[in-house]
Amino acid sequence: MDLKTLNNLSNLVEKYNAQLLPVIKNKKFEDIKKVYDEGFREFGENRLEQLLDHKDKLKDAKFHFIAPLQSRKIKKVMESSIAVHTISRKKEAELINDNYTNQNLYVQINIDDDPNKSGIKVKEVEVFFSIFNKLNYFPVGIMCIPSIENDSKLAFSRMQNINEKLKKNYKDYMGELSMGMSDDYQIALDYGATLIRIGSKIFN
Image (cartoon, rainbow, N blue to C red; front, top):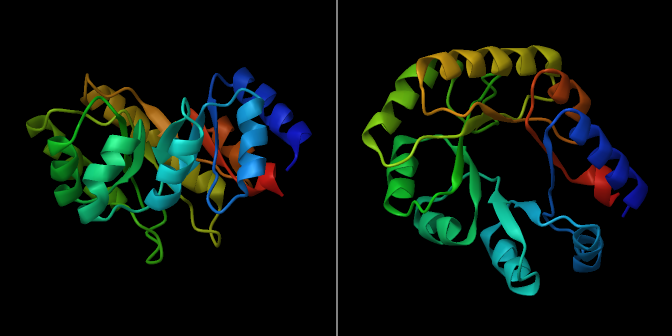
């Protein structure tokens, strides 16, 4: 647990007018509590069961769900989260619509067309976003996890371009960019990330 790194990251994202989201998957509760005691109240979680446990222990904390969705768990995820970063199927979008209570929702894009990553393909973005014209909500932004084998600058540049097109095409789109993790957050910020998801950099 590195409080100095945490504070340095906080100062950095503030300069970019972005948000630092500590990712707490499989982290020790005492370490999570240290981050909480530094004033953080929003956390990223990959597993619903751990999210519910942390929600019970940290009463005023809020949670972002940042893992691939399972249809049978969407209702509970929505009840327990203020944001979901991983919408990538029409069925998910429709189930979320049935359980929507003003959460911030992101569409995940498989920006490198990586078979090991979730998300819609770049060529599917326009058609996929048209789904939301018939639903009770509209995504606030898009999210990606670049392939470790590819150049993250290219991935984040593509995301920035997609984001700008979406802002032009949809008046209800807020243009949030959830991208950048422990190894590439600085590059992501330079390409317009509004939220970076950091786990190992803080908790190592």
